[in-house]
Length: 313
Ligand code: RIB
Image 1 (cartoon, rainbow, N blue to C red):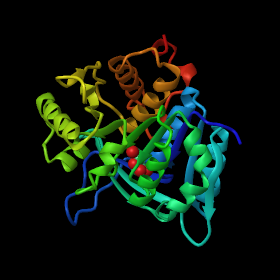
Image 2 (cartoon, rainbow, N blue to C red):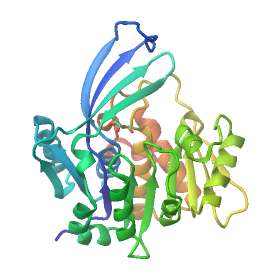
Image 3 (tube, rainbow, N blue to C red):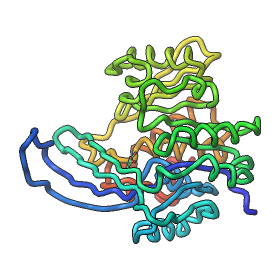
């Protein structure tokens, strides 16, 4: 069995994206400007982000028995992802996401149908135990059933020196707080931070307040990605949260997947850039995440290692 450095137990979606000047009002029909389709899903995005940077990765996932599922399987192979536990599931569609990118707001709105992602089970996790336990970094999200994510995290944590990164996305209210004690690093965006901690995150001070709530919930390290403002983080042992600033991008084209690219880059940094301290690892990951907002789509906009020599020094 091949050993992979990064394991992802998560979702694969096909993204259907419409770019528009503005979001239509209720009951209104308007013309969009452009349509694209591409490979997405938070789990696979984080996996491909790390793989494009050169990490050895394994994905535990379910795809539907439609053309999308077959194409997705081939894509994972093309990026040298270990697919021994990516299953094509009969009688169900692959996961899909309908994305609207509003150019006036510079933001996106995402509606997903889970399809085969919803059938990824704790038993699937058990069958992939060897791969999960041998990885150095594990990436887990909530676009698959919660009990499957929890089972995967518990199994991964049986090995003490590995780094468990948890991205509770899409965020859910009233998540069992035990989940926060399982992870080494929690990563959320402003919306997810607000939904979980009930702190409205508009300013850096708000982010600090939300980070302190995450530490109270039992997180060892919590990071809030702040888009053009970089990220802020707090740890259990450090007195005060820290703001990691980046140079903002003027007129971003599409922010879809930027958070996933941040997570893939962070996972990469914990293996291949482990001489950096946490602040530097977050800065490195923010700078890589900036790269994708200048291009349309999720995975298609993620850089290969060869595209970013200036960030690899
Ligand atoms: O995080 C971005 C992703 O969210 C998209 O690729 C879409 O599939 C949804 O899962």
